[in-house]
Length: 175
Image 1 (spheres, rainbow, N blue to C red):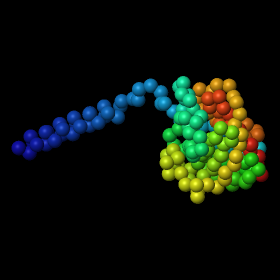
Image 2 (cartoon, rainbow, N blue to C red; image 1 turned 30 degrees about the horizontal axis):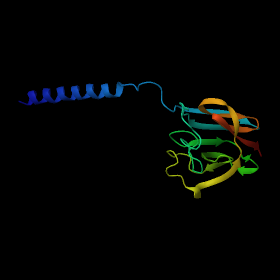
Image 3 (cartoon, rainbow, N blue to C red; image 1 turned 90 degrees about the horizontal axis):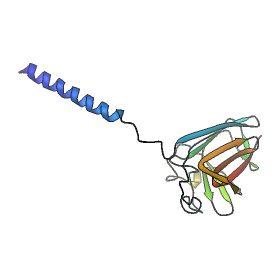
Image 4 (cartoon, one colour; image 1 turned 120 degrees about the vertical axis):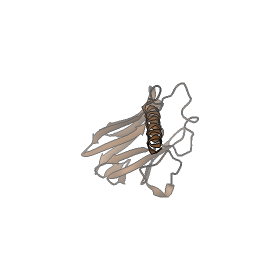
């Protein structure tokens, strides 16, 4: 009787293992809607890295609709965008200490608020707390040729968000 129970238990364990392996082996269909991306570059002596998820326009109206005006936005998709610097920086003339930050933005039609928040690991802007902001600056967006997928670019003068027909430049200097 014990041998029979052993073989039944062993058989059930094998079946359960095979079924669970099949579930884990399934691959997602097609590319991610907003794939993770990052850009790393030098601004003066500082190494800057921006990590973000990159949504596509897909024929949608982005500014003022998909990304509402006058509301805190995660500056990408999925998790909040993060900004890391290994040196202290001057961002639009204001000091930002070396470290890792979440990067949020508040778009409007004429100007954008760029926010560096002390809590880098956040999902979206759902638990964003203004009291955790370490720096807020205001910048002017400008027209840009069509860019289907959101990207960040870093150059010697700073960084910019580029998406749809807009670029949002942020001037940065090392201290």
